[in-house]
Image (cartoon, rainbow, N blue to C red; front, side, top):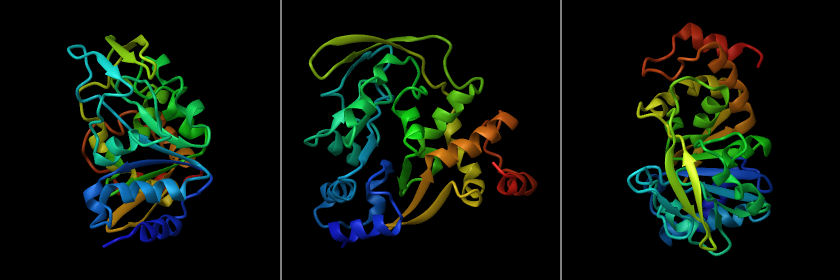
Length: 264
């Protein structure tokens, strides 16, 4: 059974920058048995990042839509796991007001990081928290999940303007802010094609280009992505290959070798 101290040691071994910015995607069950359960995992992450900025996604895209258009910063549950739901309710954590792709943040400059998310009409706008991960040269920790859960890659596709990723029309969504104010947030959505299911294809290239490495957090296989390097590598690839994530076909050995070895 893992303790908080065990998990903190794992974060150290993973070379997580304790004064930087860390975004965490997670599968709690993958970690194994933890003394104190999910709260201990959050305690470990929060304590390790006490001098930095800890961010977890608190998405609601699964159920906030045109038929159910009102998102509440305080009350809307997340649809991506127990750690995100517990984290958003913790003391000192603040949550952004984007109706479908919100984040919750704790620590250094947390308010500045999340404050404008509801002013954008797309899920991962460059000026939103997802783009600020790049500005802050954040690390993205994927605990027990793979690249298919890395929302930051959706952002890169959006910034490169890959066709077909976003709806052309807006849904009339609304966000209820922390103080009860209701604001209109007309929002374009990710289209129904599961593009993110194909993000796994670039894993060997990201590893070879030193944009990602793999370790352990408890029992969980854990991927650590450097936001800046991931952006650099995938922007190059998407500009060259706009259909990179359009199907589930593995990349050819020739393509992997080429993008693994070119200077980016």
